[in-house]
Length: 220
Ligand SMILES: O=C([O-])CC(=O)C(=O)O
Ligand SMILES: [Mg+2]
Image (cartoon, rainbow, N blue to C red; front, top):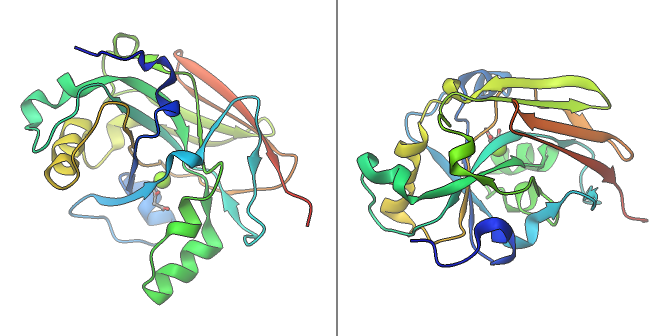
């Protein structure tokens, strides 16, 4: 039983757990190997940004990328959750962007350093409204898309995920206890590209939700 109102889960201060390289076509476009186990990293709740507020480009990057992803909102926590009951822990979904400072990530990768400043900065996690679980009956088969200034850049289907949602919930919860209000970003399909100040990003999950964000740059 969910005891809190999930519709503003981003205000609870819970974890954002991100899965990397969960689509083979995206792993290939960045010349990365296809993973045999999920690759995980975290964003803090301060990364959340909602429609109406801009995505702010960090001053230290000159190559900010968009990554459109299906977010899974946890409604019931747990540790070592079996795959067979994993979906009982899902309250719903959110459309998410995993904004990435690609130049910083490349530098961290080459030096063997963590991706924190490439992935976890303020406004690195734009999200849609909360989507009730019943509105996406088959989360393993929904289409995601993203346009920059009206030009289609990403178009993929969650059926292309290497690791399924039940597998990810089970895998993550073996190492990191899942709590009500946590969000799992399930990885991005191919088509990631650079965005600039004043760009408009529009993204959607087939007929379920759309969202729009502006890109801004702080004064230097
Ligand atoms: O930065 C990356 O390429 C890894 C990642 O987040 C994704 O695949 O969604
Ligand atoms: Mg990502």
